[in-house]
Image (cartoon, rainbow, N blue to C red; front, side):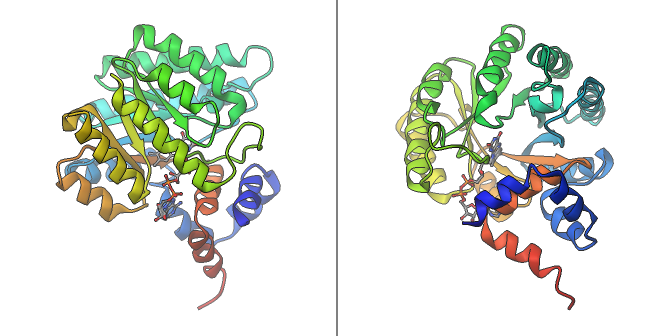
Length: 308
Ligand code: FAD
């Protein structure tokens, strides 16, 4: 019940001000965000990679409404890639980008503005021996994001994309992307979507996830299993065995701060595990989606308002 309310709140400026101003918010936010600045985030990246995990870094931000902010996003990613390369982490750390932070929804050429910005990021990523994954946002952006993927993969074939199993279209998209060299992160989906484009029942979302997993594991691409759900992880492992996939032909991905013991357990069992590490001051939308996914997170957050 509360999930949709929180997802609606994740796009409210008024709620953003209230939540960000509350002093008790910070400790709860820190569970999911690796810091407001790149410095602390790099400490997290070093610790995770030293323990055998890989990472994908997200410089937080979304829904930018002017070109200057879109350019600032691009510049933040260029700085991030330079920092990763200087730290010798190019092989273990890649970056995840939200095209709305690169200007995708700007009127008058937003798609092209985002493409040009992310192309520069992909160029530096390739030169540094790493990759970019395009996060997926709400359903209105999927065509544009997949078109950007198509463009980028011409010169940067390692560029990855995300498919969301709650969308009806995802089975077709999975089939189209299950091709050699194609990196696809499959997730359930984190936005509030209408019933004419997306499954509303969790069971249907899960069934769709399994169908897309089957397609991706049977294909020639590189599946990235973006889920904390033990059932989805077990099914992915069964599919990997059935298709005789070596451990370096697919990977598991989880979010920073969620099921960390399971991340380590899988890595110690010889699986490739990548942690999605968000950092930056613009954490509000990301944080609210994490609260919406799990009532226990919201309860923890609300309890922090009550004086001890
Ligand atoms: P669920 O059924 O939601 O959860 C399974 C179990 O995982 C829960 O029982 C709980 O133990 C644990 N869990 C799940 N979420 C939380 C949480 N917030 N806090 C604490 N425990 C939790 N979505 C997009 O729409 N676009 C993206 O680009 C995108 N990128 C992602 C990248 C990665 C690496 C991951 C892991 C997720 C991403 N998501 C993205 C979010 C995704 O769509 C889901 O909302 C989220 O992963 C929860 O779904 P689940 O598969 O973990 O299963």
